[in-house]
Length: 197
Image 1: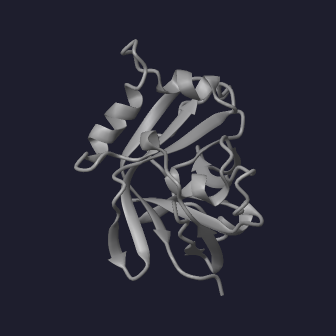
Image 2: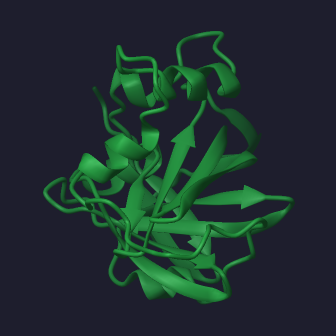
């Protein structure tokens, strides 16, 4: 599979990413974002809602935060992308016209990415759960800081192209703490392609 470089600019910071998606990380042709999310949630045979169980058993472990995830997402600061540190790639989750989550990684597939999100009034920098570098970011990362775990569930594999070299998928953001889980289903996951300057 050919890797495609992606360039995303957040507050003057350039980020580059590519994608080699697995079948579970991409929606099937003609599958809506809602159908994709249902398929991801029901991947285990027992039929129970196992999303939280899969997060708890993943590399980040179960989140220990005692606060519920927020009812409404809040925009990240203008310097959020700079807080990711050295990156070669990244994407953003937008809801209601605001960027509420940014994530980036180096192109080294032996590394995990980082992300910035505001939870209950605190802008948090979180480490990635999965190796894969910038490719894992575009596919929809899972990140955490011990108290909370945040996952992006990216929809359809074929993105919309709202502008030149800009690709956008329907997406959900899921925030999990030790006290519960909340889904934010009406968002977009956006990446922009181009060569780094």
